[in-house]
Length: 251
Image (cartoon, rainbow, N blue to C red; front, side, top):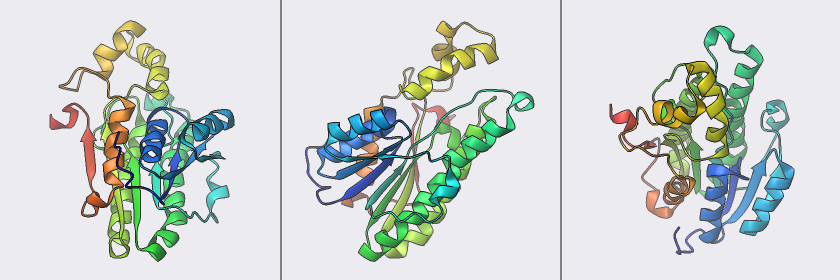
C-alpha cells in the first residue's frame, strides 16, 4: 500500500466495497488520501467498511438498474467491482439469474459511468477502473452469464476510454484470476457439484488448473494495481485490460 498521499482531495466510489476486492480498494485509496464512498447491498457491512476508511457508505441495490437512470455522481474515481456468480450448464441456467448478472455487472456499470462522467468532464480529470476477470478475456464452461457480462464490461470500458480521452478521463479493466474473496469461496460447493468432484479438490483442479502460478490472487494485490491506475502516473493508460492471472491468458 502506498504511503504517498497522492489522492488527497479526490472522491472515490467503490461498488461492492464492503468486502473482498472492493474493501481492499477502499483501504488503498483512503491510505492515499481519498474520501471513499463504499457502495454495497449490505448496509451494516458498508457502514463498518466506511468507518474503517473514514469515508461514507451508500446502501444500494445495483441490480435495480431502473433506479439508476437519473443518477448524478460527483466523484473523481469510480471502481465498478460489485458482482456475483452462478455456476450452471446453459441448459439448466435460470433465465432470471442470467438477467440478474447482466444487470448487476454490465448495465449498472454503464449507468454509474454515465452518472459520473459529466462531473469528471467538467474537472477534466477522472479515473474509471472496471474489475473484470480473466473471464473477461477467456471463457469457462458453466459460467455463461458471468463470462458474457465480463466480456461486455471489457467493451464498455474501451468505449468509455475513447469518449473520455479528450476530457482527461481514463477507463481500464483489471483482469484477475481467482481471488481469495467471499465470492470465490461461495463457488466451491457449486463447482464441486457441477464437475462431480469433492469440494476439497475444487481449488487445485478447477480454480488453479489454468494458471502457471499455483495460488489464488490476494485482494490487496488487485487493489495495488487499481491504486496505480487511478494515479496521475497512469494518465496515458486507457482502454487497457491488465491481467493479474498468474499466466492464465498466456496460454
